[in-house]
Amino acid sequence: MSAVMTPTTAVKVIRAPRRRRSSGLFYASAIVLTVVALAAIFAPLVAPYDPDAVDFLSFYGSPSAAHWLGTDGLGRDMLSRMIFGARTALLGPLLVVIVSTVFGVLLGLVAAWRGGWIDAALSRVFEVVFAFPSLLIGIMAVALFGKGLTAPVIAMSIAYIPYVARLTRSLVIAERTRPYVAAYRVQGFSEPWIALRRVLPNVTPIVGAQSTLNFGYVLAELAALSFLGLGVQAPTADWGSMINEAKAGLISGHFIPALVPALAVVIVVVAVNIIGEELSERIGGGVSL
Image (cartoon, rainbow, N blue to C red; front, top):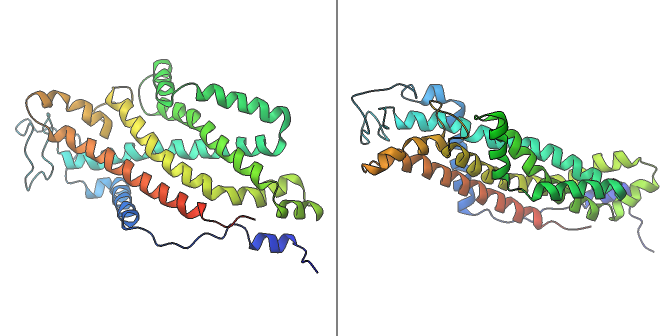
């Protein structure tokens, strides 16, 4: 005599994550991101100097007890500028990830659940946006609306929405054919309720893992825009703009002002990618219905 799967029993077997031991790189990456985030949040308290304070007697100073990372071409303390620069370096990608994830999930859910001409129309829009690299869209936004952080963040958000939407769409299409969805329909639950209250929570972890990876990509792209002089503008501390400002010192052999922010971008991006890949592996080991 076969057992009948009810909505209650269906919910209990949805995606039981595989238990696996986290790697040392995962914990190291989490520590790095935590330290950077805390430094950005409490920058006024932990920075030893005003990041914009100019010292004409300390141009390109070497690392010392007074200035742990030395000074830049205007005598400004590099450590203080790195700490304050973490704010813009992390805030921009965070905003892009939040906006692109929210709108991408909603559009992907609508496209997969409604299907038909709505799915076709949204898919064509996604393909058009895919045709333009996100960095190019950011440059176009700066050309239209001016330099700064606002225009690139809006442009990058639009550019990354299709990535999240396409992933959500494919996941929802797979989920809507599972037995627990049919069980809820038999019980008389409405389609919006099933989609938002049961299907969406099941795909959110996978989308969240992908959005974590997107954070690293966006951070690198926004830093590139600032390096080109199209993002955050001087004298505001930002890792990308700090590399741009340090170009003149490279000719005279002063590498630290350019090397430190460049290494910070690389380390944070690598840490985010490690965490995102670890989350993807954990979620990917779930048990399918």
